[in-house]
Length: 194
Image (cartoon, rainbow, N blue to C red; front, side, top):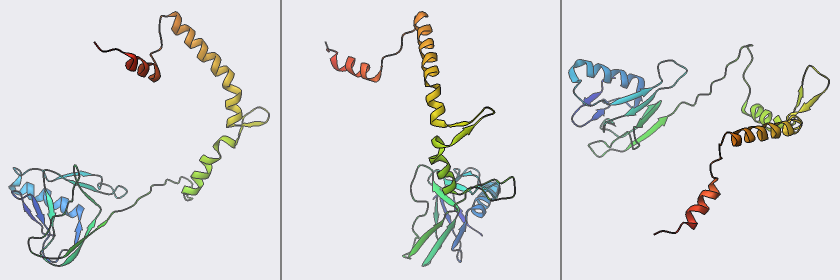
């Protein structure tokens, strides 16, 4: 598409007849415009992704640049992800009095990797696995098994012993624990100002 870049007004005008804004094409045409001798203009974009098909393009308008639709009543469709760095609307009004509806088509992509040729787990499968984690039976080379909660209960006395040992070693070395949040709050509220 043949866009009109205005470095002074910081606008990118979509040509007549263009109602779908392909951001990959737009970014490429802007780079060509800069290479054609327009380098002194402020940078218009910051791009993330888009370099491989699995990662969609995220294009951020910088330095006050905006997109202006063609001068006609239309629905402007923006493919991929067009944003303004720091927030705001990436599309400005036409110069004439036209009705322009802007529709963003944002790709939703979930990545799954299968090494056995089967499909990956569903969200429901993952949720069920997380939900039952503490109740599942863990097995070992020894006899029987235990749930994660039973293993945690079995280890609790040993973990308490280790914690006490570390605390006593730190105390012997002269380390004192920093005050708790409650102790800090009490000290501040009870402080008398001069």
